[in-house]
Image (cartoon, rainbow over all chains, first blue to last red; front, side):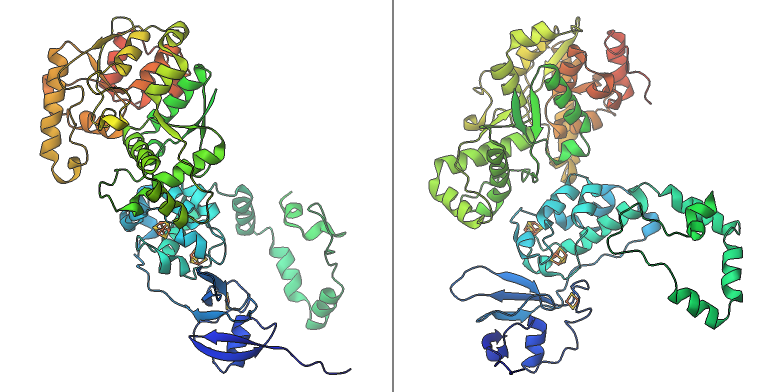
Length: 249
Length: 293
Ligand code: SF4
Ligand code: SF4
Ligand code: FES
């Protein structure tokens, strides 16, 4: 195969020009340019929030954001990484929280300084409607806030832009925690399954597994029935005796 | 009839009785209040500084949401939301340069065209429904009930943003009449309750409460109807020490809902303190909602 020449594009990292191969993510482009990550990089999979990046394009007044590990470098991007932004995090004793909006108001009264500028939602690389979430919290709708803020990966970019100096991502995380632990209906089947474990319903199954030799376990593993990629919600293995619902019957 | 509606943060937290009674009563009058899908806090207090456009963003963004919903009106019932939104709407209507600045800043939104009329629920009742219509739909006339109409500050001040000329306090009186009760005029109908001084200078609010309650009582009122959650809270909370002057405080929308005979859980009288409930009970108005407390 004939080697095609890789096209090089110029990008500006913290103001300095570099030529990097086209098609790289911002993260790889920075590594290509010689930067070595100590901070500002974690999962490389778009989920840890370590690689928040701010950039501008020539001739465009807007500020853009990206996750460096997820976004391809474009020609003439002016970028800098903002892996951390200081944000007021107020510790709280979860057991003492009452599951009411006032829990959040007491810990983060600054959220009432929000002027609805929307700079937070505009910068969010995960498209969290941050301004709306803060509005839901102001009006006491923790459930709606928790759902709308679900995609937040705590990169902190919203907080870097906040006119009200509010640490939105800590506030939203508190809302999610309050919702998850104190407001969301408890899953009944979980309690039933835990009870079954306590009653020893699964002991025989575990004992059987533990009495098997490594060879036998390997064989079982290799021959296991795998759920097809196209399986629907109602898919069940042919041998259903290991399913929890079978055990609980 | 369908109208865009912004309840406001307090109506979703401390003053749910105001929100629920409003929506239920309007439904009984065939007016559907369509809550804006994404609204913000109105900003609470209108910003006076001429060049402080930052604090006009929140109210104007709400006007854009109303514009997106397709109507030409935005209804509120909280007096504070009304005042803030109304004044912001007038500010940008009269100052196209300020509107331009705000539209340019909110580049992620469609431009606000300046055409949303912010109206208080009392205006909707007066202008869109009509007192006669309301009277015709009353199921439980509020007979033998002497109600002081307390407008507070923000429905009539400043005059550009008032629901009616400030020297003509009629809307709430007319509503009370349409519901079969007797409106009571008293000298302090628009005296400020002390508002946010409740936080820093509570004695101001206690004194104002004493003044308002005693003048209402001297004028022969048995209860006070309000539209503002902060007036309601101040007058209710601060009367506890006032002995003889004590008097039930109720949202006018609760009276409306009661008279229209909506589901007791929706007129929300169960949320009123026990003395207010037993008063309404003694007037034979609460048959269905005495269970709570
Ligand atoms: S909400 Fe804020 S912290 Fe969360 S992902 Fe978006 S910008 Fe990052
Ligand atoms: S950046 Fe801050 S002030 Fe602006 S909308 Fe978001 S939370 Fe509110
Ligand atoms: S490195 Fe984790 S999100 Fe980019």
